[in-house]
Image 1 (cartoon, rainbow, N blue to C red):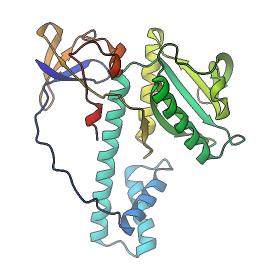
Image 2: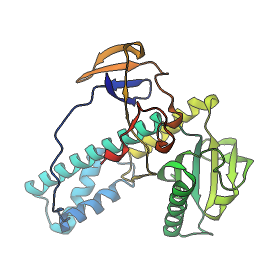
Image 3: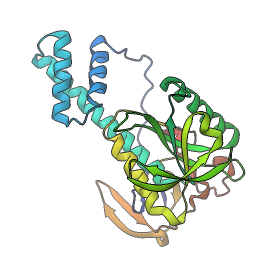
Image 4: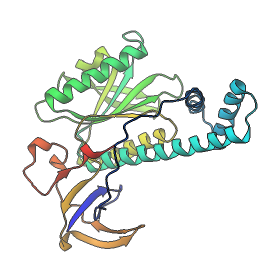
Length: 293
């Protein structure tokens, strides 16, 4: 049977695709009102601190109250509605990130750290993203890039899961011993001299020996994503799920999670070329990334 497959963090899960009618395209896009922009500004400011949900809402109420006067019940309903939409959107982003990270193959976990002697925050972000986009289109690099700010210094840096095809690496990687302020211990850093023009970098290899460390890295980024509204940058062609013809021999058991799903054996397919569309030889696989919102 034809099934949609994703990775939930422990196993590959299959379910039969639902055939829903496509939504009619919307010709007009609703413009953000002054109130919407004021809410977004207050919401983003509330995300900078270690505030709980109730404290966030109070922060936004006070910010809007300062600008528009006392927050009446109508405006209070608006705030609740906007918060609900923000939370749902964040859950969808985190879910999409996790499925992409766990389904696809990566060979490097990379960190790029901003250096104020070489760039401003704006030029660092713009030039780094442009460089990675060029490497994706010219050398076939595949990456997921998520911004983070240091807790102590507030210094901007990016974490990325990368797949770099054989023979397509740029620069020379040198192994260096360094001290991690986050881990409070010495560790090895793998510096790529091509990217030193942006600041500090670390190309940690991902392989079968450090699968546990890879999972920790995924969980670390997801934990940060739940506390911020920063978006993830993806290169093209990274599916969060694939479609495959599943046989009974590949199914471990059946389960019910709002719908019937199937737990699959770990070796149901080879992740080697899941997202490298032009290299596929197996006609059973279909890339769904083009249909993502």
